[in-house]
Image (cartoon, rainbow, N blue to C red; front, side, top):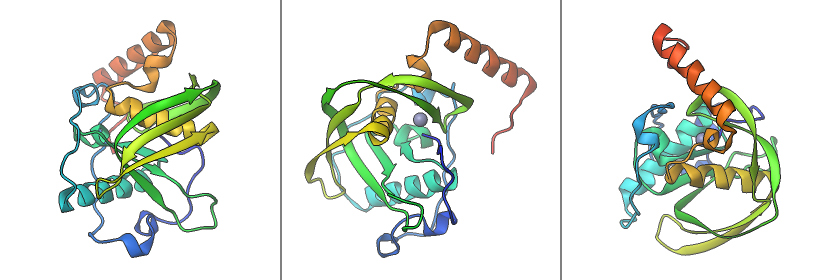
Length: 197
Ligand SMILES: [Zn+2]
């Protein structure tokens, strides 16, 4: 998801410094209508250095954008993997949570909040989501966890988990709004605007 608030500082200090193991690597973010955003994703079964490196790349890419969540398909990896920003306030050092094979196992209530997406250029829109969700996931060692989130954090989790199921937030909009957006993207394709970063 795109940041509704700008983060202070630069991407180099994006993660707790004691967790930085690899040189910073910013990956390309694929934009709608890139087919990889719609492809099925594979369950992660090896919890190795390759996974840790990929997570680090995703966090670097997310904070550079800047965003508050990123799913693996957005950087062209068809895997069930997301990272979400968990920084509580602007004064503290940025921290993020990698969630491997995340799945919503319970939900309640509903809320409407404004969303944007690093893969959907130049659009924010109100989306109806669950108010509260419980997510089952694995950590980088493969240990299972459950996390319950509400409000804005619940929105971020639902948005990112949608990504690993090939769903974009525009899919939750009315057919008319979605059609208007598609038309706009088509126009860009013809005029090659806006340019990719
Ligand atoms: Zn997104």
